[in-house]
Image (tube, rainbow, N blue to C red; front, side):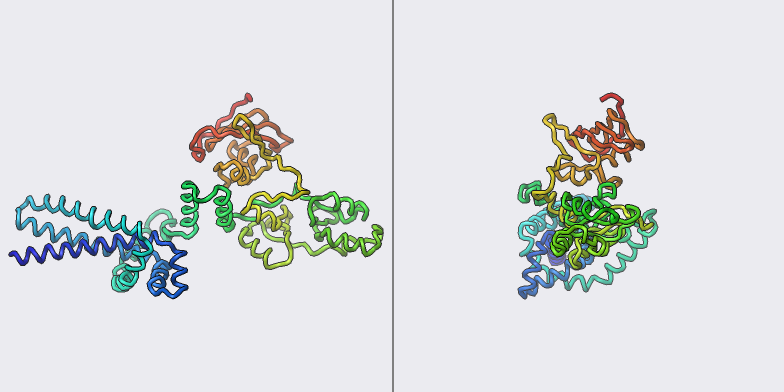
Length: 436
């Protein structure tokens, strides 16, 4: 009997040790610095290379840990219950419950996970070889579990959870940036730039393009002297040229090409052939992602593209600078006019032009207005109000108060915006007040 008790106690301790191993391994491999593991792997560290292979398939790690942890915990509880029932009768169940709860929580969960968090890199390097073997051994069982889970998920009304990736790379990086920003390790401006890089794949050119109503264009039928004067007045180095109708863009005129041709003609404007100087326009769909378009700009030799909709109609234009501004913020040179579209007031309100992009307002004021349904501030108000408001009307939604200041025909030209509570992201029912 004494030998059986010692063997049972030894088995329970061994199982608790395995449980601690699984818990600590899960925490360490989740919290490990992937950048450091990548560097160590490139330097030839074998264990780091194993860690990198494991992190390439995180679902296998989680599946093995869950299966192994539950297996050893249940078996340890069963052995402890059997032993204490034989010693104390039916009260042994209560004793076993209390004892195993304390042992598992303290020695198999809190203690190993705390150590793993404090020394995640060292812990991961140590457990990686063992974990890789266990993943292979338990692979048949985890495959069976995954099959059952996917079969059950296929019966749910939605499909969003069928292929959910709980360790999405972008989400992990974004969360780490936000955490470091709150702790003061990353400056707010740097966080905006890092976030802008991550957002490039989610944004389309239609979200940031210069709308056709704001495009500076030139009529090819204008007099050469008039065209030269328009080019000199413009703050842009590239201007679209149209013929017969503004939507019929036939080319893009570059200031340098015009000046070079003008110098070659002894500055005789009458000798210029404007159309021959134009480069072929580059048309792109309005659904092109910013990430894809940035790649095209970098590969090609053009820095401006015309955006068209599904019917081939020109909707606007986008430049390389527009995309870069989504990352680094507004780029202003000595020829750009002072941007007064966003005007913070002393009373805490902000006066903005209706055409101001929501992303620019969020970036400058550190706000969190949603930009899923509308691109501009005026568009957001119209979308939420479900109408075109009149000057003096006031609306409150998403934790912000919007007052319409001016309206030009059917366009909201100016608004006053103010946060009304600390939970700026929570939407409340839109309300309107006719008085200002």
